[in-house]
View 1: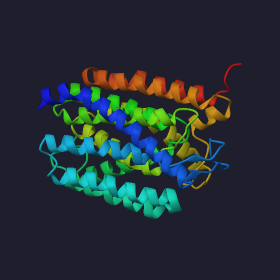
View 2 (view 1 turned 90 degrees about the horizontal axis):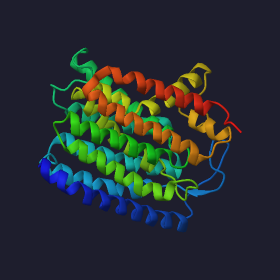
View 3 (view 1 turned 135 degrees about the vertical axis):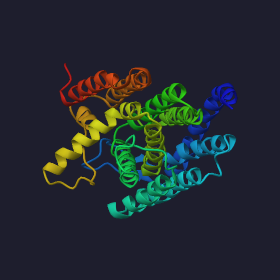
Length: 335
């Protein structure tokens, strides 16, 4: 099985890139024809109406490979896999309704809770997010809350051209590298490779100046699937790499949320206060900001890979690099 995946991953990777690019392009044409646009407002980082819903192309490209890999490894019939795939489809549906009509935070969060909670409840009892530090019920609750936070922060961070797609690719790389070294399942490495592929296909259309946005239809289910891979990695003893891989996203979104909460603001509402948004407001282009953030996240992927051998020590350069990135984003560019 391992040799099969290794020998076929490159051809399937190329196919996934082409499928994602083609499906996103097709989605763009449909959205334009139906005049489904994300209109600029006071909280937006874009200035012209842009089609929103590119997640259709990304998810329709990703899910077949995800299902095929689960079937090939004999895990498609397992309740966890079925709940995970069902949860992704459910979140696509509710997120598209949100994109089109707008939903309040309660139905969105309730759907995410049902999707994540169902998967977590079906995991084997010998898996632990906290390495046995918490009793199983509390450990499962903690894992669910961490997963839900990641889903939402991934959605929060989809605010400028190229950032979400590039970040998904970088996190997919981290998952692939760590899974190949940490093991024992090659399935997670293959999933990481497919996330990289569909993200690249989407970036062809989303790089600055973006022709299409991901929308909740993409950011929520992608965050859901990425979050599962990270939670599963942590439960397999990879807590350190599972923390390093999304460290920039965790830092930017969490610090911003805490600041808004301390001011008594509604943290679930859209805003323009993330560090990456401040960077563009200070005069940097979307491309420069996104490129820098993606390069940092590619470095985090390498640090996560090295942490399999060196453990917690790799948190030091990872944290230091993220701090430098946030400080860079918060300061005006040099003329």
